[in-house]
Length: 132
Image (cartoon, rainbow, N blue to C red; front, top):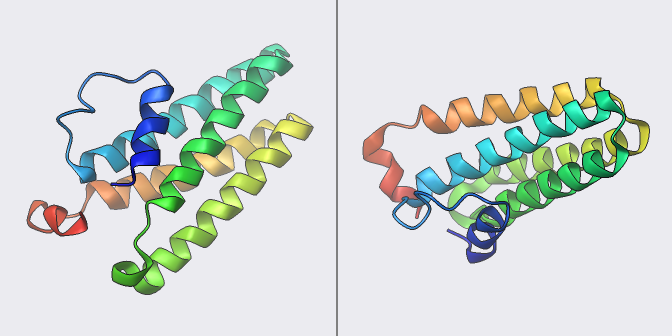
């Protein structure tokens, strides 16, 4: 697990369970953390709270950036390269959403993250230790 990713997740306020979590669980926690912040940013955008929306989207972007940094391109090959491109796309879309306050973009990025998280959670237990 990338130490920067672990520190980023701790910095956004989630303490419990991080210390004892496996690398697989930490990635799941990061995905959930990004989703939570995007959902909160959506609420802030709806309320017109521009400052809070920006803060939350910045945190979401940082989490996604750390997810990308955690990819092992040697072991992950094409899948890691595709995920890296997708993370980059999501970061760009979140920047656009911040500038335009377009909640549909937030919904789009959330849907992508949900798909990634579902795939991540569906990895059989016997393969989860191979990811570290």
